[in-house]
Length: 251
Ligand SMILES: [Zn+2]
Image 1 (spheres, rainbow, N blue to C red):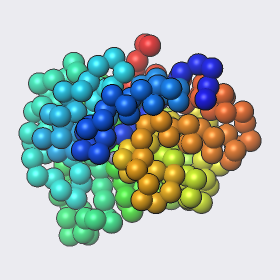
Image 2: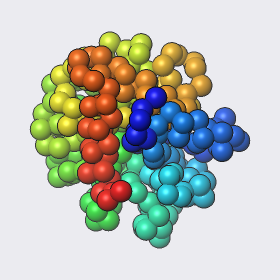
Image 3: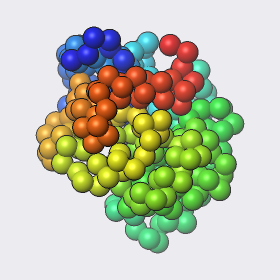
Image 4: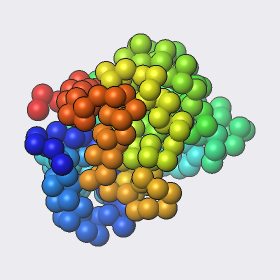
């Protein structure tokens, strides 16, 4: 698709059984589509262990817990501390008022804060899940003084997103933008400097129910380019630079 392979999928779940069973093929198609690096996200203790097993130059790991299922979160914290050298980010962590109830919000927030502090202590970015709780999650992050932040698949208030972007927060855009007016309006109102690419594979593919893969990161590129009326190559370059900065990668 592109002359230079510089797409970075900052959020995927390569340990999902549908992907890990044919990981070689999934990564080869990603490379052929111009994807340079994939950050696979471990959710909960077992999945986080599995994510670490597939880390290499190309695949990096981000470890966290689902806000609506916090079982074993202490184990994830210990794992991140123990394997800090092999972990590129903390998360996904955050708040969820879609699958999680209002009654659990206090507990969700407490654990979210613990992970944000851990990320700061270890000088790593935090990858944030904030379904139906975008504005709230941003408030907690700002209150904790988080600076290196990836808001993944953000579905919240665009004005809150703009304020967060002014503080350096990044927003990763999934291929679902092909069917989402909310994602398009988010992209329209944020500067390129605030955008990253993600796929959330195997979820959030271009159409509902489709099996998503990191190779689809180019769909996000094309939609961002279309919405912002810029050449796709500019989107590739900007999101690449933003990814290097956010994750602290030198190459
Ligand atoms: Zn995810």
